[in-house]
Image (cartoon, rainbow, N blue to C red; front, top):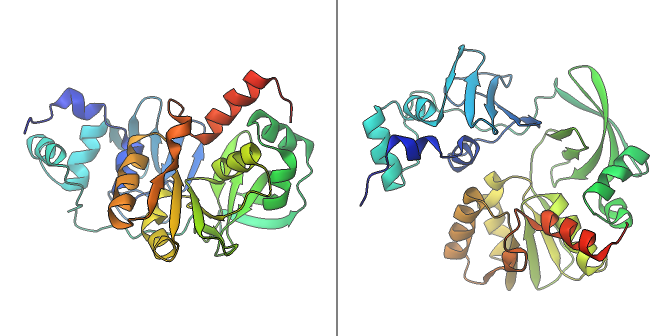
Length: 289
């Protein structure tokens, strides 16, 4: 087995690697993903990953760096040992105090003020930019007014099974507490599985709002394990995950665990995700939603 070198290790996506280790961002703003620090215990997200630079910085400790700098702290090992771990595909964490998973934003951060019918023109414009049919989104989403650090925001809200919301607008990508997956049980034999709700809405935009089936939106790859309980109870499942390394890893895990699973992402091969495919299709057809 060929051993990975430092240059190759530095190219590994920090966000993807953290997801594989079970860490997810508390919120995302632009190219910056904010986490509860994976290398120490804290209650307020101060660990930033810049996806454009593939670099991290822990504001609580005043340290940061590239993937290797993070890897040796996560695993408490030397660079040589880290490269050996990566070459062997070892993602096990071995630092002194393993950080417990939390369910999205602390309550003092995001507070839902109200959720009503989706009609704000700015949010409708955002849907149009994503090529998502307004009436489809209106059927499954709410217009949510919330506060974040005492500032008010308006976003499209997609409710999960525990009552929390996935919150989206042109500037923000957030989750309110509690974080969970969303399962829409319509008594069908086939369940369609998505990484995020925009892909769910994209498929309905393509196939019609009355498309038959059950629908499972993970809202985070960290809920793949929980989703297995649902998938095991259905005769068939179709996966519409993103085309990236983190999703590919989870796809392989699901298919290995559940025999009746189909990779339904082939029809948007060459695109980052289902929504990216939808946008190109709408542009090529010259359709306005």
